[in-house]
Length: 116
Image (cartoon, rainbow, N blue to C red):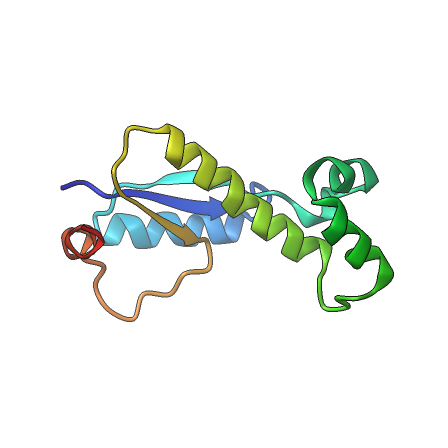
């Protein structure tokens, strides 16, 4: 059973990209990078087009002072990747971020069996 592995990565984060490439190569894991939404590029137009109006209202009112554009971008990256996975033929997918730290070996077969 095959688990498709995706790593969310900001294209400009070359160090993190290199880190993932080294780790995945060492662990012999096939993966694909998925381009993250950059919180620095979020503007009013993006917010209006991508954020639910109620959340946008709360965002601007200060109701959630901890909610940042970077957090919205992170959520958007996961949302976009989930949409891609749902359209794909892959029955199983593992989504990682580019700052993952493996405490032990990643056993994709075991992960796939537990997903059943």
